[in-house]
Length: 249
Image (cartoon, rainbow, N blue to C red; front, side, top):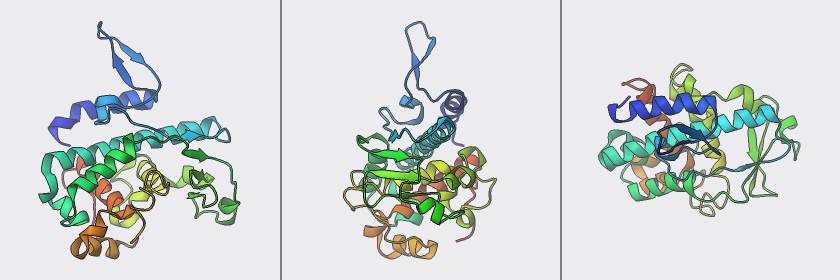
């Protein structure tokens, strides 16, 4: 883990899992907990979150809020790496080739800080797809209600917290969406107001195709959902262990 980030991230993690609230320091240097966001501790000054529908019970809410916080942490590491190493970074080139770093930075900023007004996450099986795909569907975007995402029960048993990162196998084996916080980013990017009305899309999902995009079609690599997910996971893996846990491409 890089020295410049170690202290703030470790401290933030202790606070986050005790309470989904930001840390606000007053003039007497005491801590006040208010409605949750990460503030500067993880690189986001004004993070935004979807609304959780009333069908989400207390346990759903607790686990989904933890996933939101993991999303903030994972993307903050990615943003920090972009700012520190730029587009000449070998990790950047692996997933985005010669694609525009301004596009990548803009997508990360938009994911975390753009308005999510009207974006709804619901925990009822509104379309019956969870029941129809048990052990497979962790959630789905609602085509009939484009601002809504359904989270299935399978999400809670199949998706892991960032605290398990690199202990569950290589990234290329388990996939970035194995982790709840990174999977949540993929779900955000199905929402038209977040994906730029289709500017960011699922143009390639198989690993070989994703790598090929970076090597030969970087214009679309910076527009492809899974290139972002792998980049974020790759960067986060190197924060857990210096050699990372990407695995063999």
